[in-house]
Image (cartoon, rainbow, N blue to C red; front, side, top):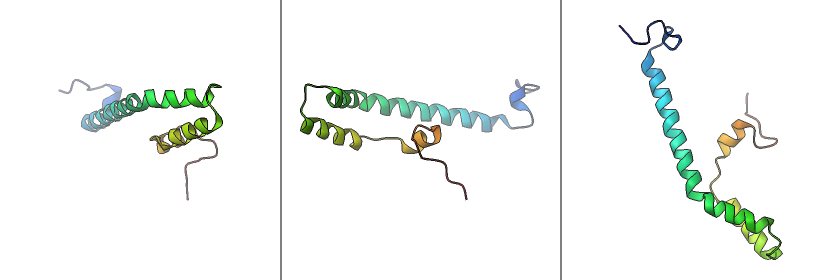
Length: 91
C-alpha cells in the first residue's frame, strides 16, 4: 500500500514523476543560489561605483559596461515579468 494513497498528490498520477519534478526544482534552486553567490560581491561593487559620486564619469561608464558583461538569467527574468516590454511569444 502506498503511503500517499488517498492523498491529493497521488490522485491518479504516479508519484515518481512528482519526485522527479521536485528534485529538478531543488537542483535548479541550488544552481541559482551558487551563481548568485559567485557574482554577488562583484555585482554589488560595480553598482556602488555607478551610484557613487566619488568616481568620475569614465569610471562609472566602465563599471556599467562590466556590469552588463556579468551573466544574467534572461529567460527566467522574462518569464517572471521583470523585464519591461518582454512577453512570452505565442503563435
